[in-house]
Length: 427
Image 1 (cartoon, rainbow, N blue to C red):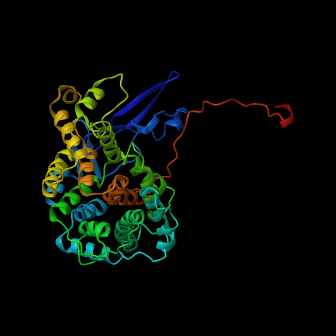
Image 2: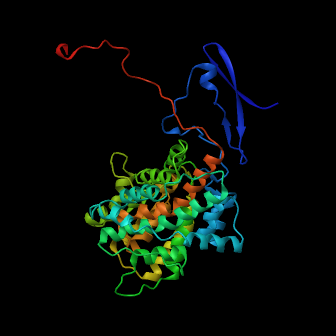
């Protein structure tokens, strides 16, 4: 007999099925709660509510575990590249050598962005935030691809996936080129996906751009680590928007906007802004560590601890090594990064931080890498979006294929009861 949860409300008892996931996650299925009882649950931020069943990502915050389609994040970051992981997330299995080559070839077919897109980006002021520009450009892709994607047609779906994978990387880098006043670059189909990101960003017409394999490898790992993270704010947004049968480009555009916030994808930008503040106020890391420990002081260390992980962020362990390699390779002597290293060293041994498990997280280390590469702070979240793209695609695809209903949360109304309307001369 299946297990059930029993709810007693106003003297009546109601039974609801228990759902158990493959990793023994337990959920109470309250799909019929309102029909049976007339009541709803109240769960601000949906911290205790499961919005879907998903086969994509498993996350255990208490144990510090992250897996994509059953594969550990440690193995994927060490043994796979970003396009392999993208294929895994979107299609469910790691590709064969032939499938991976075909996937990359098919992405390259769609890397050329319509020239009219330049008219759209020219309409933004130079100081527009790159994430706002990226969201608009992603949505604008719909205008150049007006045909709705038939999710039941594998060929149509595959083409749409390759199209957004190819064009998103290009328009993401265009947001930087626009802010710098540089000419817009085009994808080089003779080079790899992550290597193209670096040259799209930094190659100038006056000189050739030589890529550094250590930097490309570090960025490849970062993109893998950011590729998916279960039902976070931006992913839930993509699924919510897609549940109305909005198209893939429009749904991803909404995900970009959700990611923009400082409590989500903007966290690595907040790390650098904090480090810059410390530097501007004398650069005394010890002073700010003391402020962080003072419960009466409003200052908080950004990039330490995590909302989900109650242990060391498994992604941070991987990217810390890559960050050290990048800094050693580039030989960077930056006072901002020196402050970061002091904060990191203290947090890893200081009893206050260790006892509270306030370890440096992936946002802390990714911010350090981006700073070392000379990437402007307001571009950090754009790089996060590039990494998260295959996760958004896979979640959108799963939601549509599962024929999930349109998202429509309920509320508990706390406003006025019925009031008598008074004409304007009596107010």
